[in-house]
Structure formats: C-alpha cells, structure tokens
Amino acid sequence: MPQTSSGPVLQILASGLQRWIRSQCDSVDELNLALQGSAIELLRGRLKGVSLEARRVSFDQLPLMRVELQSGALKTVFRPGQPNQPVQLKDPFSIEGEVVLGGTDLNKALATDRWRWLADLLAEQLMGLTPLRSLAIDNDRLVLTADVITGKDPVQRSFSLSADRGTIRLNHCDAEGQFFLPMDESITIDDARLQGGQLVIKGNATVHP
Image (cartoon, one colour):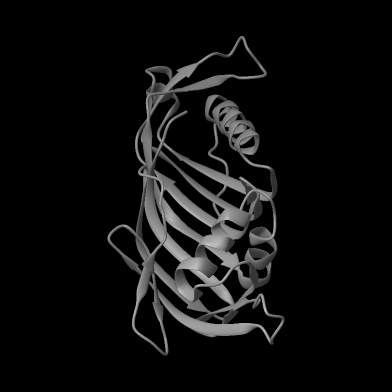
C-alpha cells in the first residue's frame, strides 16, 4: 500500500489532503496516500502528483469496495498557519485509476432515494418495466429483476457490460439492443468488466477542488 511521504512539510500536506478527501466522501474506512514531489516544489506551489488507495468508501451514497487513483500535477497553496486547512488546492486537476463495486452493495445503493432514478432508468430502458426489484452480478453477467404490474412472476434478464464511447454500455445477452449509461461530462470510462460478483471500472476524470 502507498505510504505517506516523509518530511515534515510533506507530512503536513498529506494530512491536509487526507482531511480534504474524507470531507468529499460520506465515509472512508481505510485511506493511504503517497506524494510525488519534494518540499521545495510544494513551497513553490506545485506537486507532481498523489497516489491514493482506499477501501470501503462511500462517495455520494455509492459504496465502493476499493479505490486506486493517481492524480496529475497539482497546484497548491501551503498555509502552515492554518492547521485546519494547511494546504489549498488550486485549479482543476486530472485523476485516473480503478474503482471496484460489489454487486450486493450496488443493489442496496440503487434502492436508496439518491440512486432510485438510475434503477428505474435501467429497468425501463433495458426491460420496458418499472420499478427495478433487484440487481445482481453473476460471474460476467448483470442480472436485473423487475416486477410485473399484473402480479405475475417478476421478469429477469441478463446483460453483458463493457466500456464504450467514454461510458458503460450494457448489451442484452438474449436479444438485440443496448443502453449507454448517462455519465458526467468530466468522467471518461476506459474499461469496465464484471468478475467474481464485482463491477470493476477504470477511467479518468477532472476534479474541481
């Protein structure tokens, strides 16, 4: 795992960055940072980059099992006289890396008020039915289950998943048709796959501090 960079100035920066990252998340169980750069570069307002590894993260009410990210160069303002925020990030910066979501956690997230719209969108676009009852990951297949208004047995369909056009594309396994997930314009998905009950996504994004 990455370790916090040595040196008192960089340790202060790492501590400040950890507080900022935690403030952007609902919760973080485990977080490790590694800084690329020197104290002199930091005092000049630049840092080559930051590597981050975190586990059991909740971001925007979306549970992430694991996160591994690498940032591009950062512009910073070092403020040692302000212990609550010793460093301030300037200007947008790029990040790239991988996030892993568990199927069970993703199913629970789609049942929340925050992500119910996505659950209903998936059910409507992929199955022609709403609401979505459940989502599961079965090896390399995404399995959606939706209720039928008439009270008959729920309908279940399987889908494959891949990265395409900067987002995630879902394809019917037993019929024609596909659906592209709506994606924030600041995020680009480079790779997406299902394995072992998990969704693994690689991509890059622009962060506005």
